[in-house]
Length: 354
Ligand code: SAH
Image 1 (cartoon, rainbow, N blue to C red):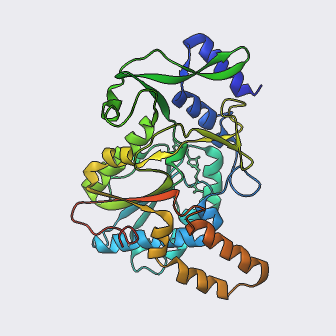
Image 2: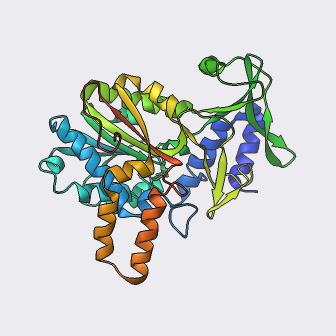
Image 3: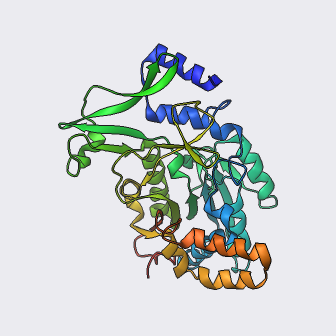
């Protein structure tokens, strides 16, 4: 049994069954034993790979889209360039390199990173050396400036709750003790006011997921963009409206039991983009585009050709495979979506519209 499993069992003995959200938060972010708090999980040697770790083209194109949105809004100075959950800092490093040539962008920019893991903050500090980022534990302390923000595979790591429809009420999926093991169990039915809008589109027994932390963060980002200008590009797997159980654990690139050995596997769920859009509504517009389509509109094919010309042999093959992996519908192209947030009256960041 992991130390974290012992700790969670003791907490359940003291307080009763815990929500999936509390279980996820402890498993991922417990300061001593949490998954992100203790390791750098990315890459072939880790548990999963993300788009910026697959190819530099991802960050370059996202960066240029944001820089164009900044130009379209009159190049406000100063402005905050922010990232939620920067991982190794690779995406931001690619954004910074790609935008070096945009006149005035770097001079006006203040770099802000929202990251809770001390281990990953250290990695980010090394990757982004020379750019003087300021770290935050939550979006609430981001400065009151025009906000140009990216988040890749951030929202899927936030703690979700799950509820099963029962009449006009819901039974919540809780985590409880079964002997020496942790196991899911349903609570007694109770009304959940925040799910009132889901009584329309669900039937008896349907399972839905909701993510209070995601709603809070999207609301804050939306409010900042509405008040000060800016734009956000939020990339993740998921769909417009979440239905069904998408809670999963990943260890060494393979699915694992999410209730065994908490702290040792990555736990995620699909992102409900409608919930983010509703929460961010003050920002004005939201748009959802498939990642493959988004990158193609921004010219990933031309960029890929140019990079391929400078490569040969295995490196060239790997580069071609990476391009396919980011864009092809059977790989990340369709499952992953890009949601853009931008103010009323402003042009959308390029890539969101055809
Ligand atoms: N964007 C990176 C990393 C994605 S993994 C990439 O694409 O490679 C999720 C990231 O979010 C990690 O950096 C993790 O430490 C961070 N994170 C998870 N929950 C967080 C929270 N509640 N607040 C801030 N950062 C969080």
